Length: 325
Ligand SMILES: [Zn+2]
Image (tube, rainbow, N blue to C red):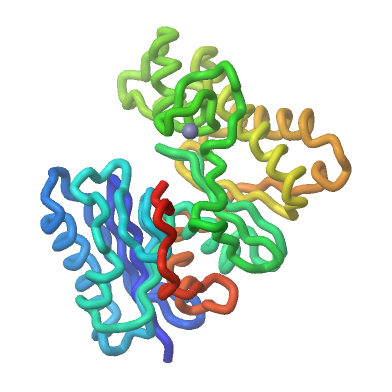
């Protein structure tokens, strides 16, 4: 029976799971991402997490048919040298080579975590059966991945799907990428919270000043919270309308904690989409919440190996000299 190790590397947590060929998660493990600047400390925490997942499924590395990884970007793809923005301990860290040596199994495939989410939703979630899907996450950051004609679409450097850097407000806030008015700069959870705080919003005494606290205030009728969540939702709707027109998408599936901010987010998103996607084919694109939650990047990572015909790729292609982004 085919089993794979699926790994999710993010700035706040590391997760691993053993997944079988029927997409069943046989075991899972999860630890907070270590803070600090030592690359080996971070690597050892990841390997301990993987070992716990293997133990939980009574699996040995020799049982594995491969290792799939969803990792925060940027990275050099397909080489799997990762430099996660929120994890300064790893800069051009050769994660793929290290995992190849660690587990002595092939293939090891590493892709952007938002790509993992899109693949997970296409393989087992909201997008099952669709031919042309944009899967995206609206959370601490905003990212996405594309399934076109039933196949994961990479782009020339593996960076296709970066919807977080589609411009939605040309005179808007500066973005961490160096641009102006990118979707991520407008709609990411922390950006939205910071804007609400600057306008005088304060969380309820039992809540934190984060996306969950902001959504709770909005649900209680706080106008600053509602207005700022609406701005984020509207920005997502504008970006998605452009993507639907460009790519003739069948569906957009949206995951991520901040996308769960309730009606102010979704109503504003749908209104903006309806206002901007005017051609019949674009307006017909379905926009739905993702179904897999935190399992999306793990199941996507598993699918990189288990359904390589649709979601896999050749890891031996030499990276282009400038493919870090
Ligand atoms: Zn940007």
